[in-house]
Image (tube, rainbow, N blue to C red; front, side, top):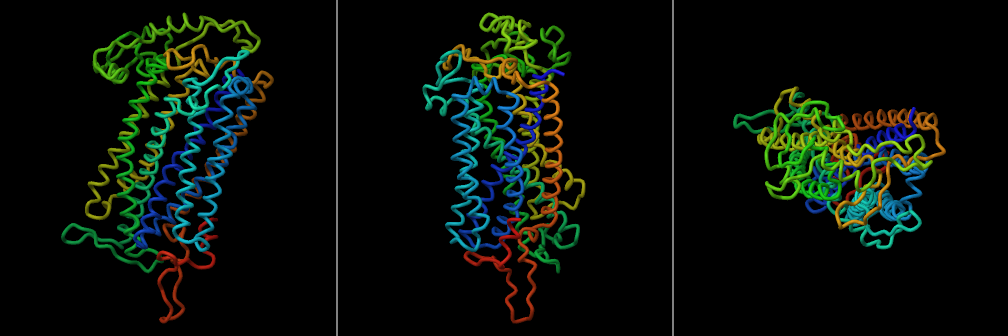
Length: 533
């Protein structure tokens, strides 16, 4: 029962869980805003249905993200008070901006969007959604600014042993943040793209399975209609357009993450060389990129790690943009880190039982090595699936195979896995520092903090274990709630988000057109509450 390790597990579990909601909220919000813009410009009913259906799922995920995200800031005070005391003068500014500005704007205008379908003019209503979505992007920006300062401290001076912000502009324009923000946004769009693709595939498959859509002699789809409300030809247009939008978004976002990831990697080689060397299990200086290494990858001295498949020059390209520059390996960097930051933790009560222990500068290489590859692998798999989806749906629908349908649905998880693996790699690769030092001259030298010094000294291992168990249990319940709600409304289709589509005329003289089917035509009296709740 070690307080530091339990605190790290607690923060890791709650943060990774919370981050499952974040990319879907950001990515899906942007996509829904584009869908409503298309409805506003064209008046086509399929775009309205797409807006309401995907918007309903967006709202479910948004509120779960809020519920799980609140815990994150409390943890700084509960388990990481020494860290909070050390970085508070810097860390507090972006967190305050996120809560008081970005999230306030995001939640206020999202509320106007939810309840403003009948009360606001169409253009104003659309603007509310765009403002809310832009607010979510700025919210992500401020959080990443705070995290990037931990990766690369800038804009501060050390006063009485604590960093004090002296240049807010440097903090908010940290080059680490400016690269990490677009990388995160593209990652979020990758999640949204796979989400659209998988769910739309499921509904198109259901239409074929139920005999609503058929394939004509020319090999093209023949959309049909069923007596079930909402399952008409417009319903087919909803799903095929959603699938194709999702596939395009997935491929573009993969290209974006690849480009920004390359820039991010080059910065890491300068700012955190040990992290990137560990990601390659590169024990010795060289230029080769390891495709597969075997041995005890957790070894701290690298003696038993053997690169089975290695591509010469690629590591140099990732680090420096050429194929010949030799990159320092783990063994060389250990000596450099020991010379710069010491061989043992200071003999200070703040380190508890760890005071005076030898510092392990090599992060857990099982995590960094495989996390780096899982991030790239899952992202590439999702992009490849999107390309295949565009090809196989060129007839206007999906194949009748149940197996392919299930594969498409499970494929939704791939970009989630890529995002999670990327963040785990980023955070665990920084160890043993919670605030990483600056080996390159662009940062402020000697501003760093060992993770062993960051945990709250007055909190026992038992208390942390109790909070770990309780929070994990609460999050597990919330996970069940989120999944059940999402599955319920996904299976319900568009009608689940637009009950007005089930309206049946009382007689032949009554207009059977679903209310809310065009610009400026609000739905039934209760449709907004049905959409919101």
